[in-house]
Amino acid sequence: MAKCPKCGEEILFLTEVETKETTATYYGSNDYDVTGAQIVSEVWSCPECGETLFTSEEEANKFFEEENNTRKEVNNDGLG
Image (cartoon, rainbow, N blue to C red; front, side, top):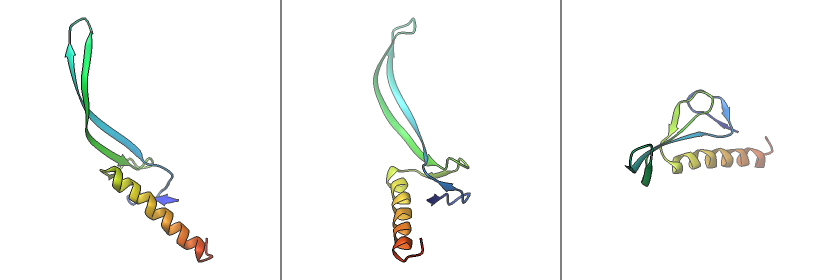
């Protein structure tokens, strides 16, 4: 299981927060026509301590891949 590098807790997942910028046309009376949405930023955080751990999906995936590889190495050595 992966461990948070900030708090040391074992974690099964990360929390992703996306900030989006939306373009819309407003016609009044709560009538909107959304014409576009773009992700401005993304962060992946520890679900236990809430600290931001990664700012790209690639980094988040690498975190879990490295943990899975470490677990496989331990299991292959007969220690896990």
